[in-house]
Amino acid sequence: MLELLELIVGMAIVFLASMLFVNAIEYAGFMLELGTSFVGAILSPLFTSLPEMIVFLVAVFVAKAEGVGVGTIFGQPFMASSLSYGLVGLAVLLGYRAGKRGNLSLKVDRSLAVPFAFVTFLFPLTLVPAFLGHHEIFGLFFLVSYVIYVAIMVKREGEAMEEPNDLYVCPNSPKFGVAIQIVCAVVLLYLGSEWLVEAVKRIALEIGISELGLALVIVPMATAIPETASAIIWGYRGKDTMSLGSLVGEKILYSTFYPGVGLLTTSWKLDDHAFMSVVATTAVSLVLLKYISKEEVPIHVLFMGLLFFVAYVFLVFVLHT
Figure 1 (cartoon, one colour):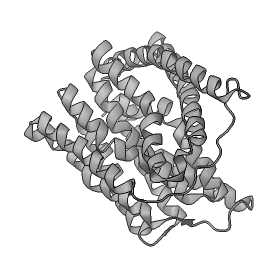
Figure 2: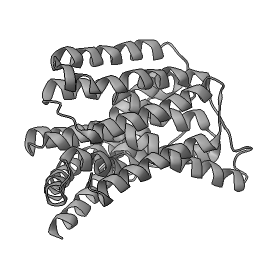
Figure 3: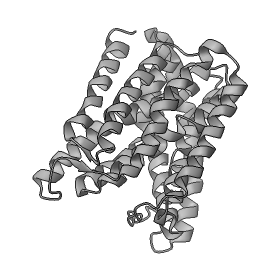
Figure 4: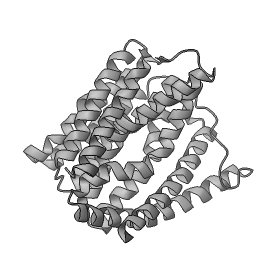
């Protein structure tokens, strides 16, 4: 019972810190007009994914819980491909019924095919080092892949970034408010991550599943909600390219940059939960890639990921697989 309470408190602190951090970064990006090109689409996910990176660093270097750290890397793509897309689908349905959008299909720019192609090809390769070793070589390969992706996307024009919500702190003094929110968020993220990681370690031991398997679904619930909320709002309003783009932008990082970091700093020991994450993420990405190439994504495709999420939760929390 104490571990569950610690987990809830840790998740709440990390969630609050993530909301503060993402809001501040989005507002800073808007002030700097980063959204006028794909540079914004590259830098924004890099900054907004820092809450997950802090959890990873605390897990690996402070709590000595590599399983939680690696589970954090595999968790975000899985959550985006399962629960997040499903919630966007619900937002599209509600937006259609409320008259905020004209149809139930998502009209998207074909340029989204590039990041989805990267995820579809590269994310399955994160499993290979667990069999072949040579972690340093693969780590450098994934980091170079991210540089190549940046080089491709920086030449492309994207949609202008919408004005974000007002800052939570000092909205009348944006520069000061952004600075205060970022400092507070980083401090809270560190403290909340310690609570969260320690709770995941103990609960995983008590219920008899791996730290990686539990972290894969628990950590993203605290850290990925702010980005998912943005995707939901854009989907509700009919800004479909921005909605799907905001989610795939972070999936790219977890298919290139963060696996590279993980391979260079951990033993990269994987289990069946990592394989389930890769299968679900790749399957959903393949289907989405097919429809994005046609510039129209039917709503039922977004709900496909929910099946993977329900199946994973059943396997882990009911069958303790």
